[in-house]
Length: 578
Image (tube, rainbow, N blue to C red; front, side, top):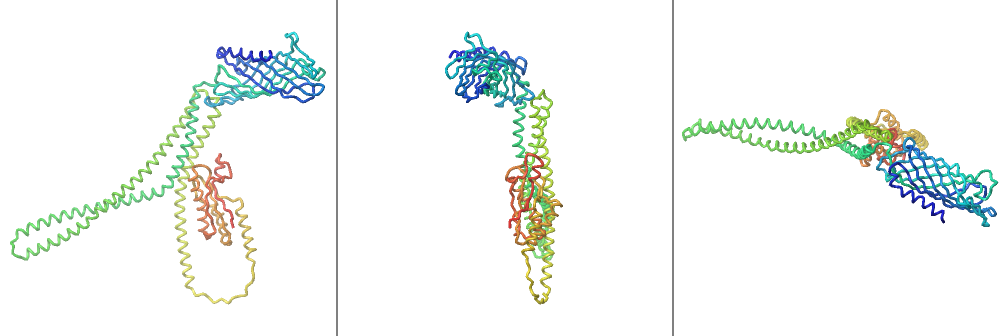
């Protein structure tokens, strides 16, 4: 019992010196483990605990001097060779625990600040008290002075340091004793030893940072800004996609504004001309009325002439006044112009907001570049490299989005051209059908029918179609739905097979990468599938043979973490469903 009290007293004495420990860097720990004796007795080991305290003084940077008082019990069952031993001792050692290089450091506000390996090597002094199953005792220190050397003492493991300066060590200790009598058997090949896996919990005092603390807030702020940039970038992508969808409407609005302005200018010119003409006629009427007033009351030919002339002028004036109703049309056009201008202003405001966010992203990039030239940030080089890669990826994504927006405009033009071409072909086919219907049908003598096997032919065509579709995919640029010439050649072959196989149905499946929201990705994937289906229909495939579906980003076939993987996922696949 006195041994236990002594083992508890030593850590308490060390704790009493905590104020002094802050003067230099040190670590105090308590540890517990389980013993696996390395002895000369082959028997069943009874798992028993091992307890210790340690104090490491880091007086040479990452290399420190430590002291480790400990006590434990051993018990082995082997019939006649049963033994039970209690041991206690103290070890002195050198301990190496790096703070850089192989150690992994994290920002100061993280729960875990550092993960580092450690290794210790030393020697010590210990005593033991062993007894066999009959109670025979072998006391290594009957006079309470004797004992034996423990060498070597070694330990190895992993140490974690938290932001609260607490430590957690997971390690393995090996202790060899100069005495071979602990197991009460002295004729073994080697002295007795202990192998002890353990866990230690401690407190780190007088902590020194591997880098100046002033860099921590900058790095933390940079990380927070970059995390926020992810959200802002997604918003920018969604808004750019929304603006891209609104571009056709914006073009129509701009054309409406231009047409309205032309109409307003024309009407204003006509209104001004009519106003001038009405003023002239009014003056002329006034002059004529004055002349008539000066004529005698009796009826004269000249008065009739003037009266008729006045009547004609007034009729003309009434007609012009009726035409002046175009002023209301001008007011309506002005109102329409104002409404269109409001819509255009809203779109311009959205574009300005996106431009502002892009400027903020550029400012953040400048901030990162400024931090690149700041004080020594070697411990954060790995983290900064990752952040820079993220920024480069964001810039590439934005460039791709701008390129895809231009491609969308081109795709719209191509689609309009294809629609016009399709209409021309339909008109041509309609004319040909009309001509054919007008021709007299020749009388054909029926020939004896020869039984054919269309199913065998259809099966051959179906097999060829399956081979043609096997592993084939149509890929697209980001947000794009335009088919390349190579894709069109492939779809031409598919169209020929589908026309020969009217009972076969194809599911046209559109897919995207995970860039952007699900709503946008579902729309883009459907539009990609529809562009393929429209091309097949233009080549003569009945619409009833095609099923168009957009799966968005829900079915990737490659990793979305790389540009190559995302390019692979932007695809359309053709699958036979019947």
